[in-house]
Image 1: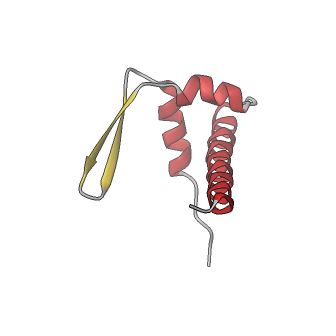
Image 2: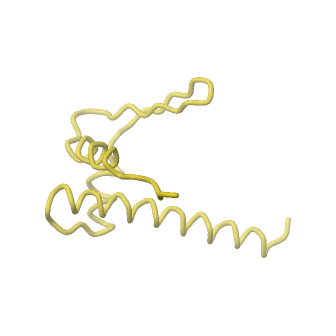
Length: 85
């Protein structure tokens, strides 16, 4: 396999992952009215236990325990609108 192509894919995946975390952080900042760092996001939200089930073409995530941050994030993401046009 071409090392340049592998590095390019890794870079694109890292950029995509950062963009996802940035959107989550921006939503939580808007919902809570406080600033969120990427480390705080990872500690409070991304380390929440979850179970994923695959059925056909759908993946369902079930959050373990009562995670207020995930519920708040889900409400905030539901209010986002895609690009117009």
